[in-house]
Amino acid sequence: MIGQNRAKYRNVSKHPLLHWALPSENPEKLRVCAVSFLNTTPLVWGMLHGPQRGIFELEFQIPAVCADHVASGAADIGIIPAFELTRQDLDTVPGVGIACHGPVRSILLVSSRPAEEIRRLAVDSSSRTSVELARVLLARRWNNEPEFTPHAPDLDDMLRIADAALVIGDPALRIEPSLLPYHVYDLGAEWVAWTGLPMVFAVWAGRKGAITSQTVEVFQQSYRYGREHIDDIVRIEAPRREFAPDLVRKYLTRHIVHELGPSDYEGMDLFLSYARRMERPV
Image 1: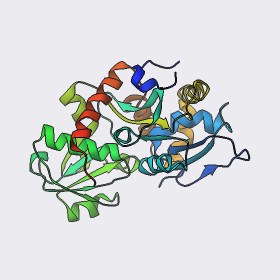
Image 2: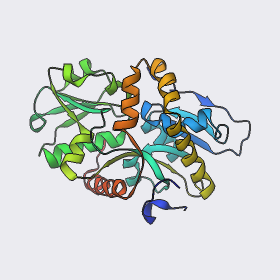
Image 3: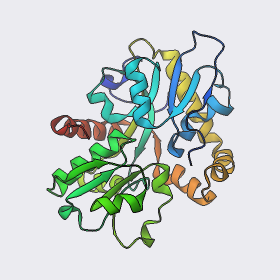
């Protein structure tokens, strides 16, 4: 089994993938909602190209929609923002998820002024964890509570209507921070520097009874297959998403962490404790 976590989380023992699914002819197959961003690709590679293909009915959405599908029953299991664990009573798949131990590269706060002075923040609300992370850091690290305004992930448009922009996922990877004439904060790096703990952005979670020991093994095997086929992921996903191969490889092997251990869950506990105290709609 990949990694270990504490009992409270064990519970059982251009976006080319957006809005498409692997159809199922078996109505009893579990419905799994995965995220269309690059960071999820190793987790589902076995389900797409390996021995785990066809076990689940698989669809791809943005993180917030995956969470909504699990909440509504449209999906049995989804890779959902960790923040959703403050809203939904779900079982989780242990040992795998999406985290960082330093700069994450795909969650950028771009601002025309220092973080302490931001008055209005335009946010891409596709990932509720990222939005709440920005809220926590602004309030607790920078003693600031700006207005949050939802906006499509277009940096120029966002900065036309706000002091700062929160850009998430693949759109953030299309930004080269060193070329921008702005303050750029990598929120993964900011969290780790502030707390000394990893940041967990998303976990596999599902309705009660959907996640069994056999299900856990399938998810973990799918990730192992992806980890072992990183060269194939780079070769296929770089041109498909119009990213440089070096960026894809570096992002998936240096910035994103998919195997979750005790320190990751400790960081997630801390984040969720802050989020519960601050929760408000965006």
